[in-house]
Image 1 (cartoon, helix red, strand yellow):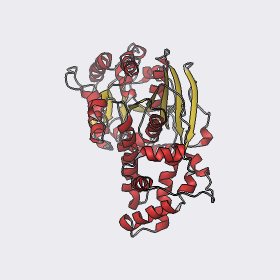
Image 2 (cartoon, rainbow, N blue to C red; image 1 turned 180 degrees about the vertical axis):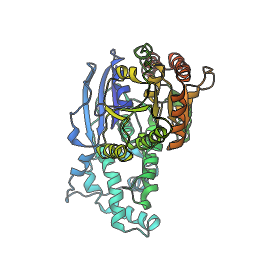
Image 3 (cartoon, rainbow, N blue to C red; image 1 turned 60 degrees about the vertical axis):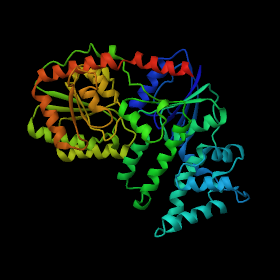
Image 4 (cartoon, one colour; image 1 turned 90 degrees about the horizontal axis):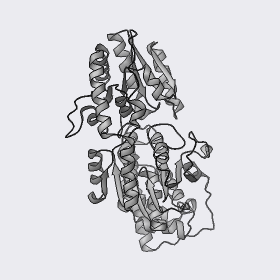
Length: 465
């Protein structure tokens, strides 16, 4: 089968959970041919891949959001929208579930120029009405530039040429989901959506904290991402998630229950289960297998470790992973220096299987997660974990209904420095407790989270289609 995988801001440009998952996923299905349709932020990244693509990847089609800024308006373009198009445009600008088929027709078949369209009389008339109704105290120029920056990348994306495939599988909603909806419109082929985290909820959390978004437009940006998610929820044949609560959220956001399926993550258990436990050397070594990114909340991790150092002097923190946010990474390095922490090691991108020999337990301090592979790998290696209570981390730590193995670590609220420090201290106190919890984690992964089982479930989806 020829399958088009649609990704946004991850594989093959960056390392990390989704990228690693995708790479292993493709390699595990050599019987299928894969076409990658990927969205990146900057065209400077064209062809700059962090992974050597597997042999069964036959094509890669790249779309870059910053290329939308290079589109020039044509002064000779004239637009005369019919009533249905005007109504769709109004809903589109207001982020109110537009008729995407009409928008796809305008930019695929009628070949509208996005830049010219956003300067057209019809667009400005609808935008003016929106300003009077919802933003009467905001300068028109501010509203115009905000709405334009919001919509231009979307119009750029929906002009894309759709690669040929038998099925289209998007690994997120957002812009990637919109490409999948476009593929469904153009080809009529089936579409599968897999969400590792709930994309629209994650964007909402980011926007609430974001400094680049003017407070007056935060609600509008949040509605924008929910609008994009709705587009693919309505068109997907199957919608998968990693755990039950995520499926409930998808249904709350408009996914039809009969389309929704839970397919848990899986890891290569056999690569981790025989890693020996670290020998006693007087230190307790803690690892965070993370990207240096705000969503991983590395700063709270550093502050929590600083509090731990006030309780004991024999702990070391190893931060494993690279970064795609150099500014945030520098802030983390500077924070460690300002706190005078000598036992924080920024290791960079390493072979986690080899490095796990040096580790007693792991920690994850994210403010948003799905079903983190790093926790499953830690469990498979008999290392317990401290996590924040996001995604399904609590279910991984304590087990879901019908899982009677026990507790494999500690789960605390996000951004709770004291709670994280206390949880780390408890695991530092007792090797016996670490071994007991680590064995519980190993048994849980062995039963529920093995990679071949996950691949069989996705292969069954393709076969069903």
